[in-house]
Image 1 (cartoon, rainbow, N blue to C red):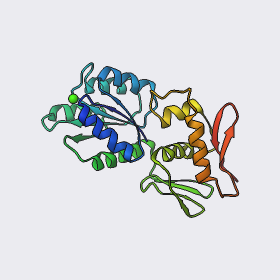
Image 2: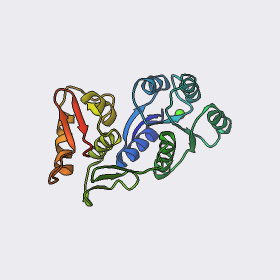
Image 3: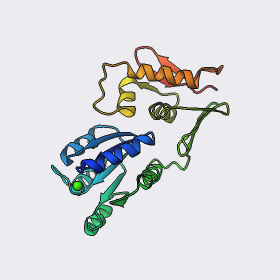
Image 4: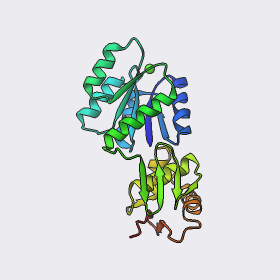
Length: 224
Ligand code: CA
């Protein structure tokens, strides 16, 4: 899950980033509303965590513009206890949920999972290709019934491949999805991670699922 957090209070933003990254999410943070809006409209995210009082541009104005432009990004508002009117305005403007500060990170994670599931229309929490399964809730990965241990970043990469089986994903697409927007495309990070994933997922298996499309990118094969 790739999350954009627009929050000017650096402590809260850092707490949210740390908590979500521990859950295997990929997180971009903007401390200003105008910068956050630019990211939200130019980069691929699964969900937006949006503060209301922001420098540059306030959260409700960002939400209004996203909905006016029919950007389908699910939005969770972070509100102060006193911001009742703003919270109601936000829900009327099309926010998917809200959370009142202070909050537990577990609650934020649970709500983000719930609204992204709703948004994708998926009730399924298990992705499966051939004998490879990924449980998005428990984060268990299995090949032929045997458990595989992945780091959060490896998990994010596999999840992205598993969400589009049979489709070729370019290095740039993978970078944008699995790493942050400030990622340097000149590095060979994608190759390195694909290799690690291959070792763990395909290593001993007779059928190799992760395919390299030379000069283009990678694809998760769907054997008949
Ligand atoms: Ca604020």
